[in-house]
Length: 379
Image (cartoon, rainbow, N blue to C red):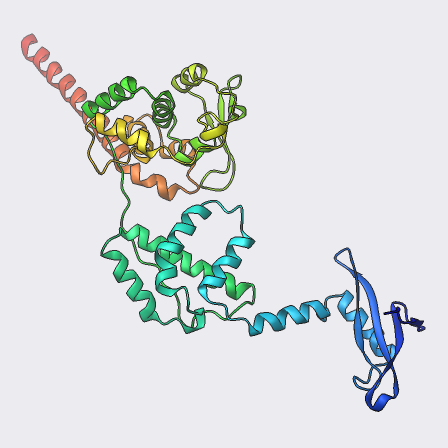
């Protein structure tokens, strides 16, 4: 089909073509063209008689769309499509994944969604959810899962609903989605005998990657994910620091490279991978639980002791109970975002201070007793 002839108007970016209207009468069809977000946009403004369109009105519409005061034709069509589309939790999940491909913890979220949310609520729209639906899910999960797992699943549900509402994909719920309250702050520690058995089991294990992974967790208090992401370029042997990328608090951190960690890393085998503890093919490792649990069992540690996160608590507990490290310094070493998380170790420092105070009292009492004895002998 040959291209229709365009006729300019006195308004920039406005032209028309000759068309046919009702009853076969000639009718002008107005178009506008402009740039938006760096892209050239050309679209129909309206018909002369059917839409009562004039060059001046077309120019006014063009100005509105340039300044974002009116949606483009494509945006209007997309809005209409979204209005007609049913946004269930399943479709929200797919849209959420596409919008946040690099979100940390996405793999864990995906497991939570497919295991718990999809079977129970996946086919529902947020506006159709009732508090009873969420309560049923929560109570069912509590029969077989820990309270922390239940809280994480409900939190993911809230995130999906907020995502849909923020993107104007669908309305939210008609009620506040309350998070289960937890009291699961757990501070793990090992007795000197348990720690000695663990160090011996680490020494005897044939997997140098797993053994050194656990040693470095114990020497530095680093989180499992931080050790997975640790690269050789992050270790500053010259200045004596470890650069922690993308920690749980969000902002990159530096922690001191103590002598034990320095010696371990200097002897740790390099495989050609940029990662200190690489996974298959030299890529970033994502799991080491089987290997470290083997070492934990060989050491005869309690079943509820978490083989990696527990070592972070052991590191913190030893420093706090030494009485030589204040809580602010401990917070920085653990890269806690706020002092609230570090407060769980406050009682250990208090115990150390109490022991020091008791020692001071004993020393003074002994000095006074000695002084009285000397005076008695002198008399």
